[in-house]
Structure formats: C-alpha cells, structure tokens
Length: 228
Ligand SMILES: N[C@@H](CCC(=O)N[C@@H](CS)C(=O)NCC(=O)O)C(=O)O
Image 1 (cartoon, protein in one colour):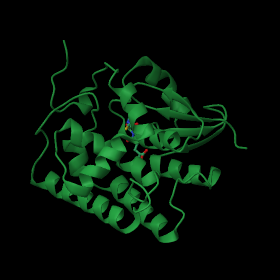
Image 2 (image 1 turned 30 degrees about the vertical axis):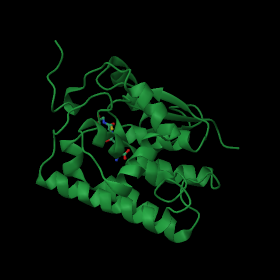
Image 3 (image 1 turned 120 degrees about the horizontal axis):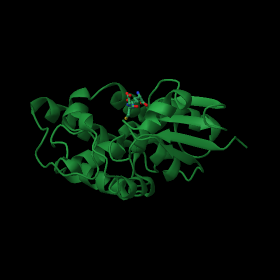
Image 4 (image 1 turned 120 degrees about the vertical axis):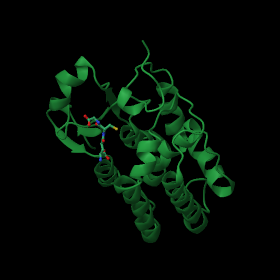
C-alpha cells in the first residue's frame, strides 16, 4: 500500500500539463487528493517553492506534500503511477501497444509547439477560427494521423486510443478540449475518438471544474483583452 497521493496542479481552465495526470488518476479510479495553486496568486508565490522542486506544476507527492517523495513532470508522473499501480492500466498491457502509447505521449510532450502556442488550453472559452495557420494545420494533421492509426491498430477493444482508457488518452485530453475551444471540426474516426475522450470520467470532471474558474491569466489568453 503506497502513501496517500497528492497532485499539485495549476488553474484547471489553463493548465494542460496539470490536467494530464489528474485525468489519468481519475480515469483509472486511483485515489488522490488535489492541491490547486492558482497562477499569479499569493498562494503561488508563497508555496510553489516548497511544493514543487521544478517550480512548475504538476507534481505528485507520496505522503505529506512538501516533505515526502515527489515526482514532477507529467510524463514522469505517468511512469511513477505505472510503477505504483502496475495493474491499474496506466499503459496498455500488450508490449507493442505500450511502446506505441509511450511514443504518442513523448511526441506530444516534446513537440507540437506551434499548435500549443497558437491554441493554448482554455476550456471555458470559445474562439472559433483563432490560431489556425498552415503550420498549426500540419500539427493537427499529425495529431489526427496519430489518433486514427492508434485506434485502427490497437483500439478495437474499446473507445480509446488503445481500447481501454490509458495515459495516452490523458495526454491528448487537453488537445480534444482545444479543438472545441477553437472550433476545429474533426471528421470520422478522429471525431468519434474526440467525443469518447470528452465524455470520459476524468475529462468531464476536470472540465466541469474548469468552466467555473474566473481568473484571467494573460499569458494564456492571446485572443482576449484582460477584463477591467
Ligand atoms: N514538461 C512539464 C511542463 C510543466 C509546465 O510547463 N507547467 C506549467 C503550467 S501548465 C507551469 O507550471 N507554469 C508555471 C511557470 O512556469 O512558472 C510537464 O510535462 O509537466
């Protein structure tokens, strides 16, 4: 039995890296607590150093946050959860499916910078048509190919990329919500998968909290003026 887990996260409307391990934990029904530290607040200034070795979110603590064992960075957290809960389904059980799922996560984690900066996660807002340019369209084309190929090759036993919900789905959850925010209409298998992901337990729960947030973080809002 592992120590109680606490996930340190940022604003649910904006923090796509926080969303990934949260949705993974919730989607796999692994018990955890959350500690939400909003960006640009006194809480962040006062507490981030003590709660985050990297100064960023997300961080997973095993035991008392700040004084137990920490794993930071979304991808490292997914791997740590796989070690703590080997039977939970963090990764697919088939070795090739598992390798492919890791490739999908790693590719997003280290890439898609054009897409990420042109279409930052903003779950509560709608900016149809914003952010799209030829380079972003290339990134989206690659994402659609990744989704479609995984569904076709590995997804037969369920609605997710590798059949059952796993870390790869958690990694693409903030991508599915971006397509809604920026009004990008998917087609065919990619659209069906997006629907399944948006309807999944963790994504629904996170999004329900995100839409209630009212803070405006200018760095994440290229398409809106700050409220006065
Ligand atoms: N590679 C990291 C990225 C983490 C990251 O960029 N977190 C952002 C929020 S989504 C953050 O903490 N920003 C605050 C800052 O940089 O001060 C991961 O995968 O967890």
